[in-house]
Image 1 (cartoon, rainbow over the protein chains, first blue to last red):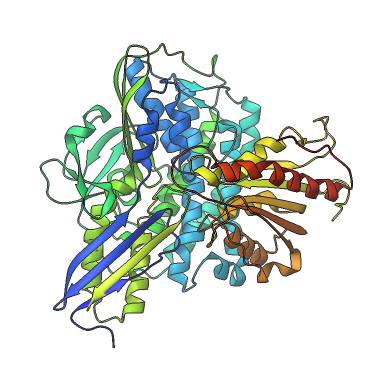
Image 2 (cartoon, rainbow over the protein chains, first blue to last red):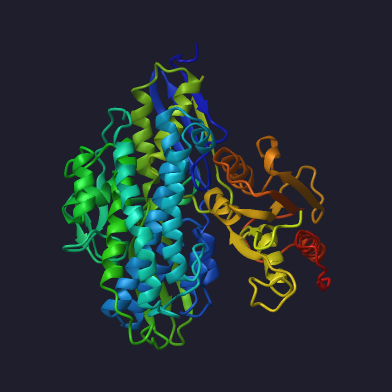
Length: 433
Length: 174
């Protein structure tokens, strides 16, 4: 009997999250007294690496923060420096940037759905056990990643830490033929993506709703991926340059990653698929919108457990967008817009698979980075994850420690935390002594 | 382990060069590029695909599917540790389910082997070369003991590739 009134739950290793950290839950007198998500977040080290480097280097350096979402880092970095340079990309290059980002969304979401998250809903300890009994399902996930990686290799030079991205565009633009050869594989991927939505929509989802303020990019007529204005469910609307006026980062004793809140708000906020979908579902392209309707999603979704459905819908969106962009692709006259060494400060923001990713660079007159700031989505979501876990655990205190710990781990995976380091490990403690 | 004509040989360097000794996989790959051709037109004696990986299992499986020989180069964290000490583990297609690989990546080579076995996508022969790490913290550059082992590790990988093709190659320099 472990579901006594006072207890501490401790999980020394939460698998199937990207990164390294720990969680601690303490229960006193039948009430959840404390929840701590402890994270060791490396981007702060990268901010130090960047100081003294040329304005041309952040896209390549920051791509190394994460093997799962390097394009997000490259894009936010490029946009920040391009803003300082006062340049904007012509349509063909902007489309190419969005196309590369589509590849990353497909790859990252397919990884999380098939390898990390779906086993929770199906009662398997991991993807290996799922593959033993449902080989065709896991192969579907791998096929989606194969299509995404092919797209990223053609545009980015390689799928892991792409090397073809530069400030102002690309070192080399692919030919229309290069991209056209991907279309067949992507058309097959679109069918696989729709099948994925249908599959995950059939999972059983715990009845749980979060009421966080939601923050995402918004771009009229387009589902937000690589650009847009920041908007919130509470009515905020601001450009990247005002991010630090609206988002306040604070040190907490139990984590090297800063927590974030919106200025003037004591409550946490959430970024990522639920926020993107709820604030932008009306902008989904046709196949993704149809898949969302068929899955039973309304115009918004506030159940974190259903984030797996939203991610699947976003795969459909990204594949659909990729096909549209390839169909309309015209090779640019130049693969990049030349940018003279800038002076001043530039801000950039894009929608990483896990949510809003903000970069700011201060550059001197020689285009040398004097300071850098990177605010990744997992850092922003920490407080919201903790808040949700508090409510989630409170409603499930009748569970013994082991199933409660498993439930907490699953709840954390709803947010696809990307803790951005080479090891993948999260320790979990629940204290109810 | 001589591959049939046209069968794939792949060398996968696992690691992150921004995590000190975890960069030994990419370092060996970089050294191999001077000795191993990536295709029939490369003009070098031994052909193998060279693949950088962050250890993500799905990507590793894609890289080695259909291969006669896959060689994985990675760092390992050992206790007690002898930084720079090298290990070599050979796993046949039918031994995969029993394999227990140790890597510096929490979700990495071991999971890739398990998943590949479940999917029937193991290479005919998988060789894992690993160097014991002294430091996998943030920063660039190998520690001296691991850097000193890089030449021997590269030579060992080359021997495996050479054996697979039944040919000789020159030994790499330090």
